[in-house]
Amino acid sequence: MKRNLTFVLIFLSSLVFAQHQVGHKQLTFTDPARSNRSIPCDVFYPATTAGEDVPMATGQFPLLVFGHGFIMGDPDLYQYLWDAFAVKGYICVFPTTENGSIFPPPNHLEFGLDLSFLSVQVNAENTQSASFFYGKLTGKTAIMGHSMGGKAAFIGVGEGNSEADVIVTMGAAISNPPIGTAVDVLGEYANQVSIPNLVISGEFDCVAAPDDNQKPLYDTCLSACKTHVTILGGGHCYFASQAGSGMMSCESGESCSSSFTIDRPTQNATVLEFLEDYLDYYLKSNSAAGVSFLAYLTSSPKITYNRECGTTWAEQLAKDPGSLTLSPNPATNSLHIDAITEKPGSVTVSIYDVQGKVVMTYIFDNSGYVFSTDIDISQLPTGLYLTIVQSGMNKYTERLVKQ
Image (cartoon, rainbow, N blue to C red):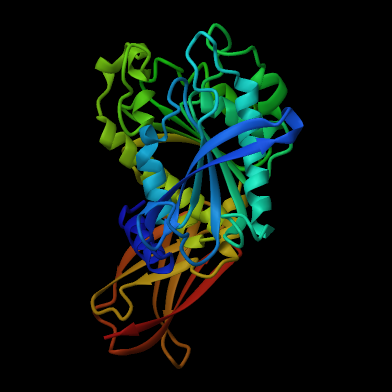
């Protein structure tokens, strides 16, 4: 698949979703169901001016609740995430609970319940006039996490009381003591997860090896549409923006770092290349972002992936406007076509003039659910045409102006 599909659709998405500044606020929530457990959080949000405790930008926004890794409770360690997503119009909540070391160990179950509680409580404050979040939430939510926080995300969603629409984890670990409380995340929680699920691994992760951690989580969950992406050359701690400090930093336990073939900024950037599209599709109903995500999976040399989604994703996108894109339009010599297909197989592209006469027809073999090609239209006379792309039962039409 051609990489320019992703770039075209990212450009279109940027026109639709305005960019913001990043506001920051520290808030503490209280869970009455757990003996009034206190949950301090750092909140990063879209604002008209950057700064501390500044007003939130006009509009309503999706919610991201993110669980940190072991001894990685400082949200600045994940700056590339909250910076990118607050700018794009997401409210990002980072709880700082369970940030202890081995003595006392963090409580994985309580951390997962924190994520679940926040997904409900923050959304509930959308209707509370005294809340900072009053009228600011769309109700769409992702629970996310790195390492221990990835495990907690599965606990939070599998526990059943969250309001998450999607779960995203990075280097999720399923370890038990001595670092944390014993929780059977596979047998008790992951097998209860049925919402869309994106599991992200680093190829050379030797803190939470993919085959022993992320793959079992991916295999166990019951999501009807789930994806496992492995970043080639990457590691565990590079899912953070910067290295921790001291002997108990994440990097102190990652003995295989000499095997990495990419650096931290590259891994951060690669995560954003597909994660932004994934969340924009599920939480902002942006069909162009869904196409871009699929194109990235099938064309990027930076990743490998497994995906179990049937035709669900493609069928949904096929119902949405924008499932056929012509560029440039008006066109002069060459026309680029992007479309969603019903299934891999034959794709027919036909161009009709204003009298309904077929002036050009092409038949292509397509290996995926996203079709992308260039055709030569230099011989067409100047004028107005209709382009029809057909794959199985899917048929799309789009007006073409030839200059």
